[in-house]
Length: 402
Image 1 (cartoon, rainbow, N blue to C red):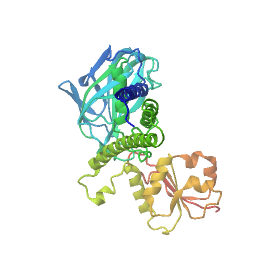
Image 2 (cartoon, one colour):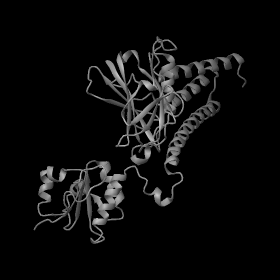
Image 3 (tube, rainbow, N blue to C red):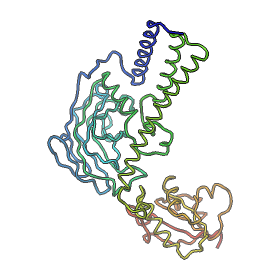
């Protein structure tokens, strides 16, 4: 059945109008705002000063040459008490920004000058990126300082290998506008974000920071609109409508898959930057927690003369540290002390209890009682990992009774 040109034209117009409306809805565009920002605050790169690291002004930009001793860098610029609600859009541009670094926005308000707020930003690449700050709870009141912080990509890049020189070209704060909202939506959906535990199934940003509306939801609504208008304006029914629905869903799925693949490519490029040109033996040691890996090596050396199947139970300052120290200690018979205690089964005598970067072994009364008859193999000041106090790694040989 042939469709009239008028019906086809109505379908195209209705579909494009619906998709445009969905895009404005996803970008949270204020329809009363102008298309371009009416007020722009420009911060050239050389308006920033270094807080951590070292940098020199160069042709209006700030050339960041080195990181601080903790391998991070921070640049900041004082602001003349601008109202946060008047400037919800941040635009920023860097040059030669390394893929091994993460980027965060840092700011302070006049209402709480002692509180430093940080927001994760996508990798800036070589183009101008945009971020909508209106959904950030702390972006309220009067902003008195704004800056950018850089640090090695967490859990992937060794801190000592993350930094490379780059340029902070400029930052801008825009008043509300259609352009700013749409540009922020594009950065949120298509910006390059680092690996996380949800990267295998997430699109775009994987964290829980304030974000734009889901691209998956928009794709689903766009497909539903196409199917609805096809039924209403083109009169599709039965098999024809089912075919149109299959095509619409397939195209939406394909578009989302392309976006997921693009994000995967961004992440793989960061991995290639880190591991390119290194031998396999060296790659095995390029971990994002080299301090924990070194502690595991030292602990393995201390336990070299123990019974090979001795039970090793670990408790660290965080769950992440516990899991990673367990990983680095393999193939020892290693496990988490917290889980062993939670099981209700008595710990076997001669178990080796390892405490890393935590003082819970003497702060917790139950642990003190548990260790009452145990002997400490590694006393304070004997064993330590880079960046921690000398007593960060303590080992006990467990005894249930004298």
